[in-house]
Figure 1 (cartoon, helix red, strand yellow):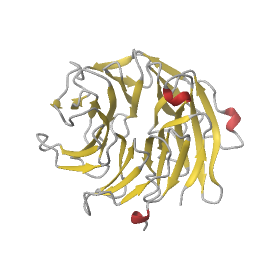
Figure 2 (spheres, rainbow, N blue to C red):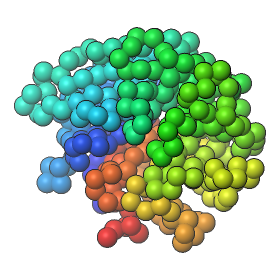
Figure 3 (cartoon, rainbow, N blue to C red):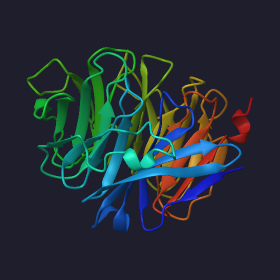
Figure 4 (cartoon, rainbow, N blue to C red):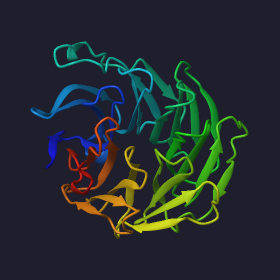
Length: 327
């Protein structure tokens, strides 16, 4: 059973659950599939008796491609956009009665990237003030959320970068993937801007997505335009440890479950969301075909076992619990 909300004329790119409020989600969207026009950030509330409801909506002059909640405050988040900027928003703890008080402009706008910023990640565990941004200009930037200028720039990809994320277990380590097929590992303290380790041809295609395991410090996964999901172990990066086939189209986003180490979800360009338990099978344990366009955003609710949200270019966000995972 799906709980659904439609954002007319806004196409979904990224959805994230609040780590503080179990029923709060942020949805980053764009006009015209992100090719032109503005972007909207929706603050949604999911109540079992009432479904998904819009609490607030914030507008930006360019498409919004990713969103990340602040790990130490329940009312702050950062988005990334097509104009190369990051926006830090506040007031996101509002309820429906006080939604009008949400500031309509970001409290800070960070402008250094030259092209679209497709990925933003707020460090959850070690350096709470640090934000990573990955751009189609081929660079990754490290930001201090209290400063207007970036702390460091990392250059180890030869083309567009789709994703960069901090390890949830190992301080100052992050990974990145892009259209050059590289999986790079970085030490954020190494200001030379060069990767700690680089895996060439991690896929024989563009790599659009990656995620770290939430329960195993050594494991991360990558998803490519080849339709493959590959898992990697930090203790031996010479070869992927297993491979999952997610269809003939690109894997746009990956999300490891915070509730079971062997469960992950993939959002795909074949309009499906797939649920995997690689301890059970190399095949998806569930395939959800509830979208009519590319599925782009995906996130598990850390506070409600196995609850998942996805969003896509069809302007639809769904919240559901996979049948095979119900407790």
